[in-house]
Length: 72
Image (tube, rainbow, N blue to C red; front, top):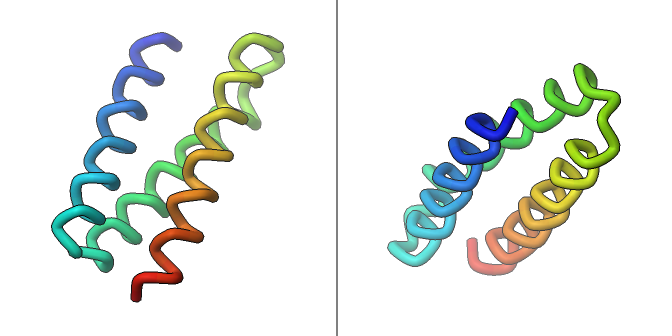
């Protein structure tokens, strides 16, 4: 599970990088992909620590989505 969070962390950084380069369409596509992966992880896990970590990333993705919607 830790490997999945490492990959998600890299993908979130990629979203942020795309936003910084003003490539909002690419950032939006990647955000949807990461969000879908988090939803799958959420459905498959009962571990409270994992669920907490997933929710942190979901909050971050929601914040990034709001930032993107104000920039486009």
